[in-house]
Length: 331
Ligand code: NDP
Image: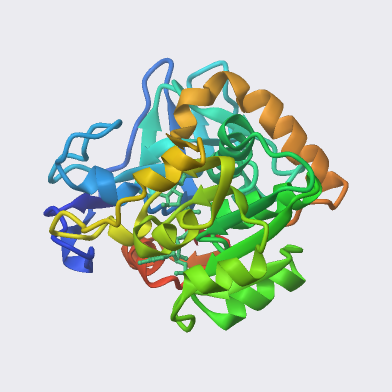
């Protein structure tokens, strides 16, 4: 059995030395009420960076020398719990561990005949829910409006843009490479894209692409990219603060442009979004996402990295933009 522990807290950008691999020969056994799980797919997510630091947040930090956890799809390989049978697949927040014992609490069965198992970590999992609920609950999209999505080629952003298109919006995505911008337009149906690495004046580019202004901004990245978008908001704009990956590795308090005057004069709403606050809406959201997938109105892409030993690198690569769509490790 292999386990990945948090060895020390990252200072700035995470490195592989923040993690420690432990291999144990002992065979895991289960008691009444327990199941034995074998990891199949492990999700790596930018928000895990926050849990690796000990700053106060909405979820407690990972403890040093304890296993790191994230969304995992695992196979039940032995069971003494009537709710699970051998061969079932489950999803849940589990350890970065090849095998582990669970009492089943917090685990959901997933049906690999309905969608590929990895989809339950992305489009039919946490990132799909984030896109759907963040956009609908805070963004309140209306046909004909203009939305800008940052982190647009990632797991959340690529789904936000597609849902906005289904709902009849004009969609502009911001991402880090020309290849990603091409993908936004050709695969996901975005109307336009901005490569923030080559475009020196994002503010001017948004003015050009959205001459009537921006009604919704779905923010995955924060920092100067977001400032440039906020200079272009319309009256009653809605700004969903979903994430701020551009500042997760900052070691000093980031400098920010003061956007308050833009919010005031436009009567705009800016609200932080945490997907777990909307748990009562998950079943309805999954139903709608599944229907759109079946109707081929929605599609998705994944970057699948192979091998348990590559989990830390896959996680670190999120901060280099090496993924398109959902970053997942296949065990
Ligand atoms: P992504 O699949 O979008 O992966 C991260 C992407 O961020 C990279 O591919 C990269 O794309 C981009 N990125 C990395 N560094 C920077 C940077 N310095 N500036 C701008 N972009 C950068 O991850 P997710 O879809 O899983 O998550 C997207 C955001 O949503 C994150 O901020 C995450 O924390 C947040 N989130 C929030 C949730 C909530 O409940 N609030 C739930 C899930 C996610 P590129 O090549 O374009 O730079």
